[in-house]
Length: 249
Image (cartoon, one colour):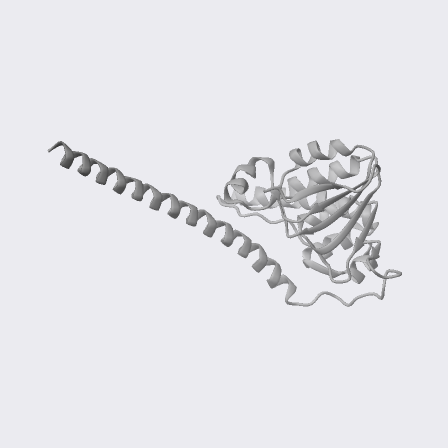
């Protein structure tokens, strides 16, 4: 269940929707098995190549996902020869915001939100290994800042601070900071917005955890169903054996 699809609007215009999770190529099998909407950069690039030189309208509504996968999709859109217009109609969170930065023009719905934060990872190991992981995360952050800096023109220190604070942006705030160029369904950028609300941090962590929990529940349900089917098959085989023995007697 890939979470992107291309819709040819005309000979020169193509519409693309991104409505799910962003995953690495190596993880495709798990998402397909669980039936979770997803995409990965290699498959995306192959499909995008069919629309070379066409103007793209990219609609995004995504909770985000893997930084590497988002970077691959970002690169593919940056290399695309036609104009890329990004339209955000829901949420563009975390890694999905990196993809949005590939737009020659980025427009947000007045009801949409964008969120940027520091990269994070689950890690285990001794003190030396964890220090190494921390250093790797620092370098990943600098790579992400590159994409934000190219789009916004903000100083790297300012972008780093926004990521440290896990900044949530309304359409007005995103335009004010340069992450977006305009607001859909209005005549202009609109008035500057106030800073993000405090509960946003809790929402982001909760949203990600709910996604993971839902996937794990789906996995356990599938395993339970398979076990039940196996038990039923075994019972059926035993009944057939008993029936055969009765007939032979």
